[in-house]
Length: 347
Image (cartoon, rainbow, N blue to C red; front, side, top):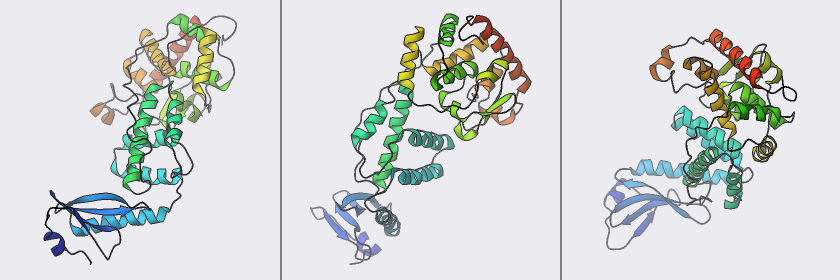
């Protein structure tokens, strides 16, 4: 029979759960149980039951529309769908339904870390291997785990998958707030042992600019400035910063993978341990404070907008502090040159 509003309205629980299906839309129907009536749809070859909503909060017309969309999605995806196709659909949904910052974070984390290939053949071990590869960056690992869960739960809800392969995966642990900065002697030791491979050149750029490591590959070098386009910054704001004489020798776009092994090699060589590459950013900002750089100029140099430039200040304060940034960079480079050892690594 075709479900009607009158039929659904008059359904009563008679002591056992029953289901009534709609002849006009196969696999769509209502379920009657003790606490009321709900709409549901059966998805996939194994006829996984998905609850759409409870009557009368959800109307029959609304339920039929949602069911039709889910069934159409499943039919359209068939048994094989690439991860990239599913990600594209999810990210479009995310941009339409989440805050811009949340959508950007999902896009960055999933495009960078989620396993590629066929979504239907994806196994729990494939995902855990990706997450294990981020042990050296616990913050990124934690954020990636959360993004993976959101994406895979969305895939289940929308009929792309029957189950979430990492359902029940434990939280990767609370990320401890760090306050580590490198001493002058440690800065000397690290710089002195930097060579000319891509990892070492990236570390040198981080020490000179305070950039995030993921931003280095997107550097666009101009004459005496460099820019990170908005789509590659954490806050979605284009970041342009001055290059002093020392920075101009080294700042360039560099693409790199294999952070953990290379970082371990550098630590062993230079003798400086217990720091992360992000600690170089904190060290950069802290040394600007030592040199008397005003906090608002430092925040401009590292493209940080949640401090001085948060709230109404960020909305109405549009002065870019270009001259002040250039002066601060000049002072910072002079200081850095003054503490570096002579010989190897000396600019």
